Image (cartoon, rainbow, N blue to C red; front, side, top):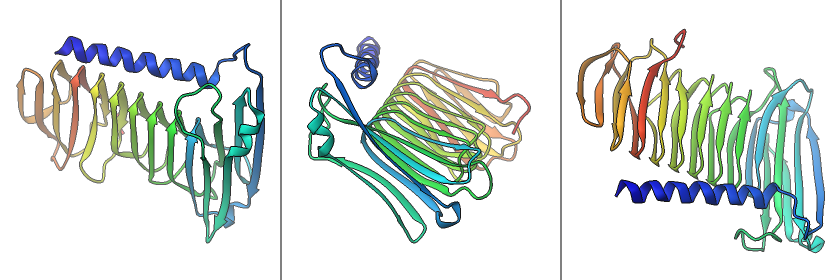
Length: 280
């Protein structure tokens, strides 16, 4: 059974790699056409940002700037007219900035289907808006230096978050999930792919896991939480847990005073829990 599931993981990763090639690699047999839409906003006018994308990567990052900027690049190979099939909405209403792309064409993985790459840049200071949510069907999502309690969802693609000031929910169906130097987590999950995150704080029970892949969680040693780690492969932990129970493929116990639960799991793969260097 594990051999079959491992094969499924290999197939999923191969499919993702093939998709990445379709989205990004140059093909001699098709010419590429592109079109960009770029809009800037005064930070004082923007409270939150939400992105809903179809097929393509989404990058949201903080940088030294005095504007909130949304850029959408449409690309297609072969049929330039397909660019017109992609609708882009960049709308600011009552402080809510929405960047949304849509198309009448099927999001199926076809070489001639258009893709949309979305890039959001915000100031790297207190004037920056909260990033409320990012959704894309097929593509990677990256958050860097942003703020806000953000929910990220993609069906096929990697999710990464670095130095985010807020509590995060990070979800993909096929792809990896990584998070480091972020305020805290609500969840970090994949169905096929590895999950590697640091847990510095939590405000409720936290799920960190995947169906097929390895899970690595770095835990701040001053957190008060209950721990449950489960795997059909193996579980390794160097956390100093009280009232701990250890069995084949399962570790549970209380870190410090206990409290909300960290549930780390995988069906096919290994789970590793370790103390973060320097704590939170």
